[in-house]
Length: 195
Ligand SMILES: [Mg+2]
Image (tube, rainbow, N blue to C red):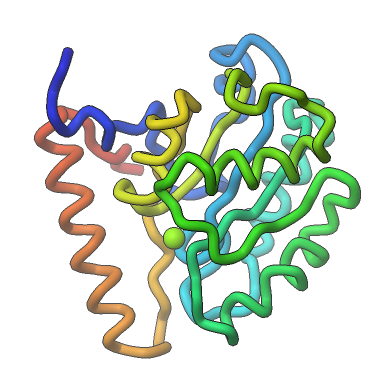
């Protein structure tokens, strides 16, 4: 199918990182994989400094189960007060040698993902562009999912975590983006799971 919106089509849809079926991804990839995680709206609600415990638990379990080779948080945020938290969050997640981060990349440019992948592999992979065991998780089609498709990576689109009380304009922007994303997915015949 050569639909013009095909670049926006994620490999999987999950409600949250906490509900990702890492075993299914492991089977589809055919082995261990690298995980590139978006920050705001994916790992934490925009404006929040905390990653919800169920998300931390799910990532820990996926690492313990041996599915994940390396993790890199990749965030487009240019807001210092948000970007400054990225290192703290990588630390809080406590992946040790598994985790690193890259703030301010230009998603969906492929180079942003290759830079993150270089970190996730600790420069041990010689041909980053040829890796096929890479999974990008993002709450926006136009950045994470388009970027993953441009690189030939697999992708998981999660429903954005909206802030409960913080910055009303941000909430409205995020909501509008989500509506646009959902319309695109509908056109492509894919919808979020109901539960
Ligand atoms: Mg996001």
